[in-house]
Image 1 (cartoon, helix red, strand yellow):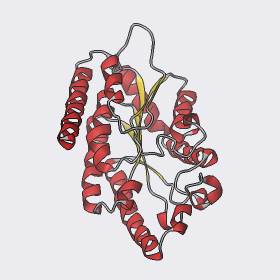
Image 2 (cartoon, rainbow, N blue to C red; image 1 turned 120 degrees about the vertical axis):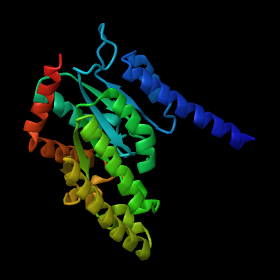
Image 3 (cartoon, rainbow, N blue to C red; image 1 turned 90 degrees about the vertical axis):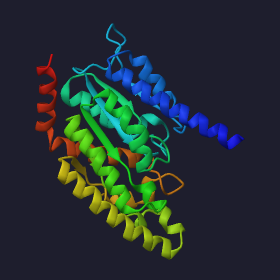
Image 4 (cartoon, rainbow, N blue to C red; image 1 turned 90 degrees about the horizontal axis):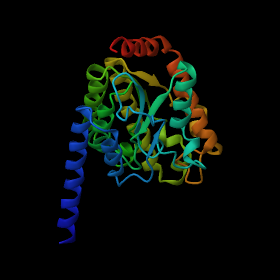
Length: 273
């Protein structure tokens, strides 16, 4: 009985989010969108920043919007506070670099795998019609032994939607060599070998998809701090404040190398006024 009740609740949540997305597309109220975010009960935290308090209460097509997609790292797990997360620092850079206000929508949720991202996070991102999207996914899929082909199919579909339909600037991070990270030193050798093989397969998928769809690759695999326990919290899995700072720097460096694409995208939004 309890299981059936929870199934009904989950289905109701899914239907509510679909309805909220439809109303957003119809340019109704941003309040509906906020409620939809609250319905993501699996997320320990959710953040919405820099929403205008004036007469325009919806996320209009002329406004600049940054959407963060991901898992617990997107929610700054392991940091002393959410404000020390990499997405907050990246949002701050966007405003500094452009001299404009940006809506900031973090739809990431702890424990998310690629299916969660596509089913729950992507629809919310689409509803906002983002200018810039950051994506960091795959770690949970590797640890839960999700087949790489399924991951690839869903990832490519998401990038196709964001790039070809939304025309968003997309930054996507690859994975560290997971067997070298601090948490992996505490697991059995055969598990470390599994992480070694799978993280390389997943990175090939991520890097190939980024190239095929014109997304900006953020190379975290080559960051030394991703393997140094001084940059992680006590679980050895999630970065600490300085670790997130280094990750943010990588995202910012990647965008700086493609700053002309961002300026062109902003100009396109002005042109449709």
